[in-house]
Length: 279
Length: 342
Ligand SMILES: Cc1ncc(C[n+]2csc(CCOP(=O)(O)OP(=O)(O)O)c2C)c(N)n1
Ligand SMILES: [Mg+2]
Image (tube, rainbow over all chains, first blue to last red; front, side, top):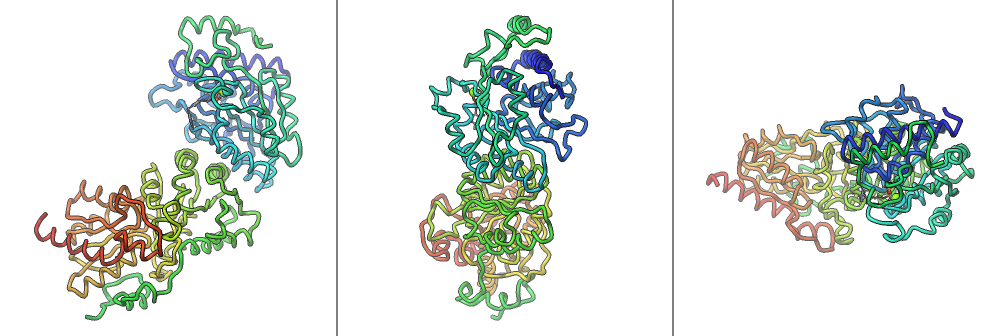
């Protein structure tokens, strides 16, 4: 467990570098959404989650559910960085017959909790794991990461009601609020704001944070549940493509991956000194 | 001609005796199989503490409210939110619980299909989907509640197990068997009361058809509520001198291919009969098997390319050609084709 946000920065930087190299190698993937979620995953996997790469299915592990399954790239690189899968295997991402598919599969990849890819499934599945934890009087928690555009799927709001109804304070929803979806800005596509008010109105305890500030993320995740008897919602304000100037905050990088030349510039920008340029 | 009970198997003797009665369907003891499911899952709960029941506001209609009364901590009502219920069932199953998610078949197989496919079947999670009002049994409720395609849809999902039992005892046995089955199971029930046919002690096995009547002139393979109509049709045909085999195909998938092929070889003609659209259900499954292995004349009884009208159950299924007179005609036609080699 890392306690120093600067060490988390270094981890996140390493994940970003591996991720971009992997995406370039595969020629496929979701660069923008991977990079917006990297600091969140780094913080969870290296400072928060009770997990063991040696025993990936231990019964009392905390569950992390990546609802935005198209960002399997950041999940695989984080799992590799954390020791769940070999780092060398990242070269097989999206290759024929690889287990590192474009969207994650729990029966193929250790550390993956759900088969996501159809948006709007992760939070409802998380309702089930959180209910099961309560049912078993267990202390493990469920963290689920959704996109923001993804919240346009109605199934999330069925789950939002259920989480508050069942007082699932062992459930933490993190919204990757990068303000972009596949084709355009969320607010031009289908208004989400006032987003925090919506979750509050549904009975959640909400905090809005800088989703790239490791110290803030660490403090936030360490203080869940925000209120006893309520599910916690973290609206993490992020940028798609965070860390690379020409990728950052651009809708067209949703499903685009860096070319060889772009990768070289991106890695230069990121630097390998363990310091996150975001800070 | 009197009924020859020795031709019949696994059925209650009093049912066999009544098969030629014109008022068979009003005289037999009838139970809606949704209630048998509710009874069975309640019994199961006593034996297995990992079993939980999930509802979506129709527990009063399925009788799982009795489960909720007895085990308030083991029943979860998700409100009118079938998608959330199915995905949550998947989440629960990842922790080793055995959720029975109950709702109407239209909602289980259509509204929540994305969750049922991607979050339950794809990761092969141990969720039991308990679907009432399957087929055009909910006559008076109309098309929105008539799941005439649920079996076809569920059958098309990779790795699915799909069950459509004929009566109350077989539904209880199927529910017990589903609890022991590793992986998702779709159980379909009738809204309306259907005759109790089976002796509860008969051997029930997922994936194994049940021979109900011997016969060598042709075979009727039926499922769910149409099994009773197939039996009545076979007895009618017996009175006319035809000796018809009747098989209950309670498990649509995995399909008991061996028993189908044996019937094909031994009787040379097959009629399928189901309360489901003719696209992709029992008729399709049997046809696919025959055409690839042992092509013989075959006819299909099922809902044709139409939505059904509202009305009392028996009247509605008769209008859409699913009752014994229609089955009798189909059997005669298939025997004609067998004889003429067409
Ligand atoms: C149900 C469903 N509809 C559409 C898609 C196609 N799709 C994949 S990613 C995406 C955009 C997601 O946007 P957002 O949730 O904001 O994620 P992020 O910005 O973090 O990539 C879409 C529409 C999908 N995967 N699932
Ligand atoms: Mg987004």
